[in-house]
Length: 179
Image (cartoon, rainbow, N blue to C red; front, top):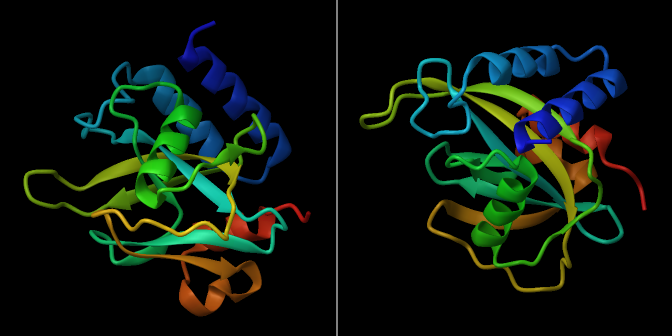
């Protein structure tokens, strides 16, 4: 089974777990109709990205980045750059952007979000079809802030709403399993 087929099965399972969410059906349709959906150059409809919701071992804190381009506190992640294994994309991006070693906590998709990215330079406004996975990392290890971030910070999950009003971040906080 190809990575694309495996991902479609993961999205289907996610939709059964979260039936009130609309994003899985939209994402499924997008992946099926757009052969180059994992390419960053796919701007007509947008492209698939992979993100990591990183919690500490006791599950009370989450790692967020203050994204340099978007000027928002968000989960770590990035472009697939042609890689249809979005869990691998999420892990790679998380480790590159934080300097941490992250461990997947689950094989399932943790969250799905579709959001607009504003035009920047030669890139037109487009959508990110973001597939998020749950990871764990040691919050005692020093962080390395990449050039994609202004800052990285471990934050208590219950305090996130004081820092961000991004519904997709707050939704992931609500979904975070306890230790």
